[in-house]
Image 1 (cartoon, rainbow, N blue to C red):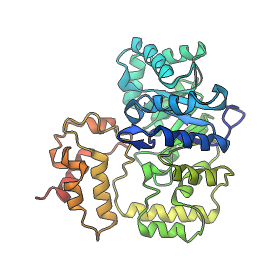
Image 2 (tube, rainbow, N blue to C red; image 1 turned 90 degrees about the vertical axis):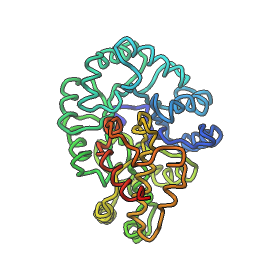
Image 3 (cartoon, rainbow, N blue to C red; image 1 turned 45 degrees about the horizontal axis):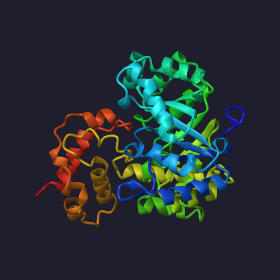
Image 4 (cartoon, helix red, strand yellow; image 1 turned 120 degrees about the vertical axis):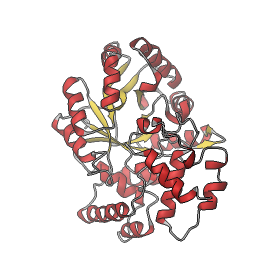
Length: 374
């Protein structure tokens, strides 16, 4: 994809949704060390958004990246998120605040965040696309794109209405490839149809493809190769037209592992593709909740239910049936200071926010049936 974006050095990027944390704050020292290692190995793409890490991702990038390195040494992507503006007049001040938070005078990429049929309607109502394209003309950012969470037909509509879109960020991994809700393959095919380079998010599905069930992990172990993450990230990067695969790395061990196979990237072999297909079948047979722990559902919950954590408890019980983690559910911080699954009032705010389109209210009822029995 170098013919499109010459400033992007490699096809692997640092996703800044999940950063190293200490005491509720970004661990500046560890994040700085991770940034250093990332850049030293020839990578330069960083992806953030105003909402990431409860608003701390942008300022952490300022401290750990932009204050410490010359502007031309890194590529920075940011996004316009619907929850931070209510009308067209709000967009420019928000954008300027994002520049200030990140400590830069321009962004390399600016994406319309989380586009879906509902979000696209809201963005159109606020003339968001037109406003942001004006910012591009003014030199406030270089490349215009969208991040997308919906059906392929909606993506086709958006790309038809706004041919100015240069790049599309989609969720793409071997579990979601043919998923009827996520439609990774179909969305990828729409991008190819419109000749739009693809940025991949959630290649390891929020860690689900790293912490595999033991029988699935054993399939990959038989290859005598890399980590479970390596097969997931290399799977995503193996397709034509993939400009960038993002990984949300939260400690040094993760970034070292990612660099080890992406510095000199090799697509998956036929045998490796066959193996991830077997892993997919095993994973899907477990009937696990496909939550990526993005935590968009948590902020608006009136009962302060830590939804991803409770889903993780149920998934753990399904995966490791011999473990009794009922006490873990009750005695953990997940429910000790926050709501239980049975406290759900079924308001639906969580489902509206969920990029995975999960039936969260139904799934919380499943969690309550399993754990809230006493």
